[in-house]
Length: 286
Ligand code: C2E
Ligand code: MG
Ligand code: MG
Ligand code: MG
Image 1 (spheres, rainbow, N blue to C red):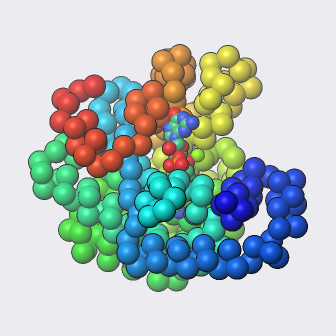
Image 2 (image 1 turned 30 degrees about the vertical axis):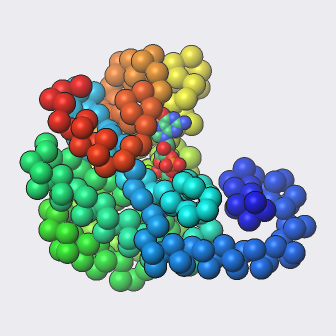
């Protein structure tokens, strides 16, 4: 499908994007159709959240789960965020999708609480477009209120680029979110740029080391040095640090040795449906 390929290519890089620009004019109507499909998906709530556990390396406890959206497309099957999130951002539909995600994640976590499962924080990804929305903090407050979930069981993941677009405004917004009682994390840390002086001002709780620095651990000396540097930076700023994309025991052992607090990745579990998390949480200590 040309449309999907085009939006995927944006992530692959510039050359790929240029390759596809030739087709763009002829596929303008395809783009419109995809937009219509996405609108319909929002109206019919064709989305589903999968959840990936995060483990505390000291205790072995699952203390949080990251909510990751999928689109259960009636014809194309289960689509991943890479297939539609950047499209949703470009067309402005991300606001509605983001609201759905936030509400669904809060509702699910409240249901787990009500079922008497050990408490976990649910972590939700936030796009730049959402974060720039003036009413957004109200949306977060409303999702908490409507679900009945306590704010401390919600975490919002922001990326460096989202924050650095306007540091002054971001810091103000983050303080309002902090006042609500939600946790804040910086996602994909190390792939963007945030100055140390800016980082010091952010009321965040955690840095998430991007998967790209984790995948070649422990053998790649540069990545090993980068991972150690991020861990030490986080601890200097009195933040927790979590590594994403941990796939092997060797990576886990390296990170543990380097003082990393928490991990997330296929080694522990792939993102799974809510029922899978429920099963996992019922196991006393994995
Ligand atoms: P992210 O927030 O950095 O999420 C982590 C991604 O890495 C997820 O991909 C997850 O499935 C994948 N992953 C986790 N552990 C491993 C591992 O050990 N190995 C490998 N190879 N991959 C691993 P996913 O679900 O495809 O999501 C991709 C991105 O889409 C996310 O990256 C996030 O930026 C975005 N996204 C996902 N859900 C939402 C959402 O509800 N709203 C917004 N705005 N963005 C979302
Ligand atoms: Mg994330
Ligand atoms: Mg991430
Ligand atoms: Mg990432």
